Amino acid sequence: MQLQIEALFCSIFKVLQSKIRHKKGYAFYQLENYQSAINYFNEAINILPNAKQDSNLHGTILFDRSYAEYYFNRRTDYYKSLKKSATIISQLEQPDYDFLLEIYAELSYETKYLGYFKEAENYLQKGYAIIKSKKNKTSKDVLFTHYAISLYCTWKKEAHILKHLKDLGRNI
Image (tube, rainbow, N blue to C red; front, side):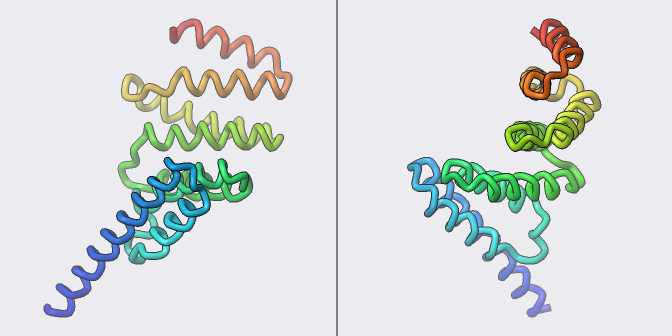
């Protein structure tokens, strides 16, 4: 019994330490000190106990780290962090759907930027599926329509552009 209590205390302590480093990373991100932010986000991830490796906290830290990587001009790392964040959050029993939609929108934008139009479209479709299943529980409809229009303009798919412009007109 004593060992179980000690293990639980150790796990809670590690989660708290991870949250502190996450907050420090976010503070450095706000100060535009992206390398320090990335370092603290990495520490926050490394401290997480194994039981929390696929948790909302882990996904959130990865998402926040991705922005520091983006602004530090580490686009490949940015993409990998976003993708891993989406994988973790989407597998949770009760994910924060607005947060997951934001991740899918960012992934769509980044893959479009990299020229992977089919993959960008796939992330948009995942987002639209969530929006459709959670109607009236999300505010991301217009954001996804915007990203879809941007994707299809770059991809030169006029019929898709027109469809989403009409959808945008209905949502406004």
